Image (cartoon, rainbow, N blue to C red; front, side):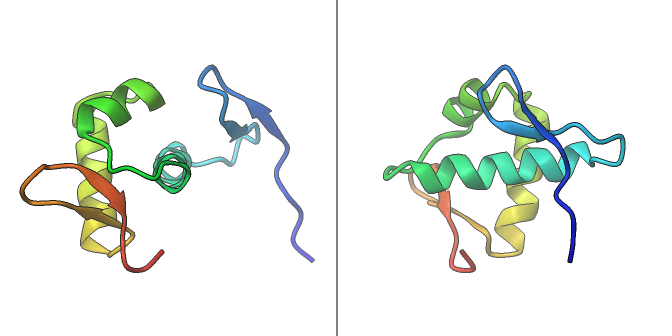
Length: 87
């Protein structure tokens, strides 16, 4: 049975692994998915950046990767993000 990593709350209120083995990019990607899943409306890059306290350039790269894999969807007209078809 897999063991869970110990977690603590970061300054945005999300649980973050405290293990030295944690991968920050994966943690950020999961926080993005959690945030989009909790919101019933699509969110812009700026809104997500402010809410998650992630630099826009970093967030844009993560969102592009998640979008390319179908985990996040981007409305081409409004440029707002929501959970994708794979979620």
